[in-house]
Amino acid sequence: DARFHWSDPLLLDQQLNAEERMVRDTARAYCQDKLAPRVLDMGVQLLRVLGVSGIFVTLALIHTGGLQGTGDTRSPFFISLVSQVGVPLGTCLLLQYLHDGLEPLDIWLAILLGHVTRCVLSVVRFRQGK
Image (cartoon, rainbow, N blue to C red; front, top):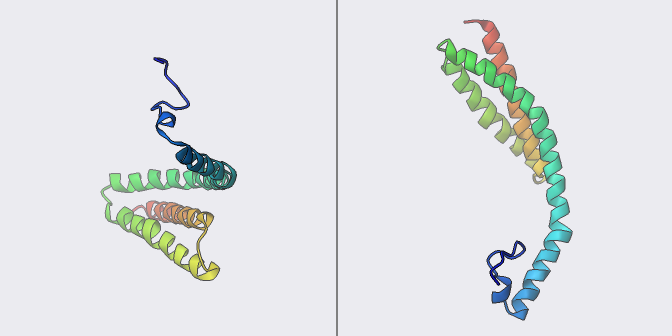
């Protein structure tokens, strides 16, 4: 058959025996029933955090770019170091200690806190006008 098969473009199904098809079908059912709902929930959580985070990242980039344009490259470096490494990692360590583990939302909120920190520090430094 010369037609293209969208459901099996590499014609792998023809190469599997009955036992291999059973393993494939079991794995597919598990992924659809158990994993897909969790992945969708995590995706929704991430998009909500990113929606808020984008505002702070945009403001931070504008002010950081302004600082760099005036020749101040040291302040943006230290602001980035603190906000993109120190704050998220420190927050994750604290949350892991308090909750006895980390959930994906904990990590995304730690990253959001880092973005808020970067925004605040960049705006404060920019307004100093030095």
